[in-house]
Length: 450
Image (cartoon, rainbow, N blue to C red; front, top):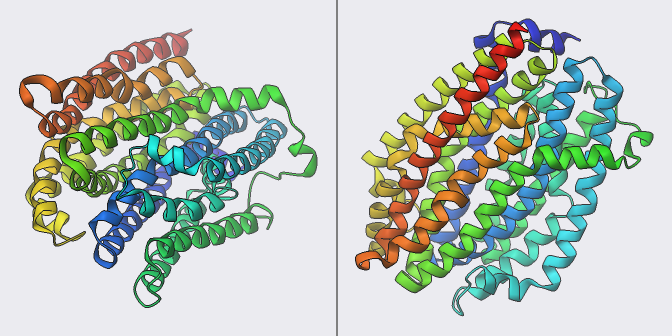
């Protein structure tokens, strides 16, 4: 009741900070892990191993996509159910989300291991990079049995207003992962398989911590055995509301296929490795923005369920301001110190030169991207599937994919055409978001005055 009261009545600035700060810290630390993991692989094995990691990464994105679809969909329903004071429905949704991620995680593991070679070739593995990617992914797929639960459950924990626990679970996994990464790659000389083992062991410890929280009397949600009984209406709603997140991540995998094949054609293994490094840097720049999103969504969803439209509008405005500040600061760091950033991953001069060139172009429109991220997340929190899906896919599918397929062929742009596709997609998708967001605000004003 105290958490619900905070979501409905606490001063918005304080509430958003309290919910966003732990999520942002957790996301930054998680992104830092991706950076450190890639640095260890680059320094300990070489840039070809980074290329292998880049090939395997889309499969990890699919695993994450499934987990986020269930988790964010369930969190949206739970936030609105708590706002409407319907605790039984909230707990039934949580139980069905646990069941769904368990079944889907097992399917991903089995199918992934069976079809691992053709899968990696589809994702653009060259003969040189295939052994690295396969060795890494074989281990990661084992963790897919339980890792989706951790991702999904974290969304539910945030939905009940306990962002600190969600942050701690991320910190535990990330810190342990970094420590094990170093031990397995350097003293034990286990190569890229060691990096994968470090990942799935740390994921398992995270799952154990979350289970202790959920069943140790600390959670608002009391998920019992009868809540695990399948309710296909709830499962359908979870997947429908969470589908935009799945679509964004799945679109990322499709983009990865296109990117890897295009990069191999125009620049070979070096270009794939450059993209692997730059992609890790971009993830680090974007993670704080998604931390703010994770703080905003339960506030927006709860107050929309409670018909407090004024608070929904207020949290959207504050979130856009906060994400823009973060985005501008991140872009300045990337533009001012690109050589230092790329050089952390590997000292190869060709990798640094090409990486600096790509990074500066790719992040040039990041300062405006906060609006696009908040807009898509808002519609998801409100349970409005179609506009959320449109905004989620606009950047990647409507704009980026056509650009990356067409621009490299124009006037022999080649790799440059691939790199400038990023800022162009950011700019156009943000304009599209602004139009839909203004329309939704007018609808909510009418709802409030009715």
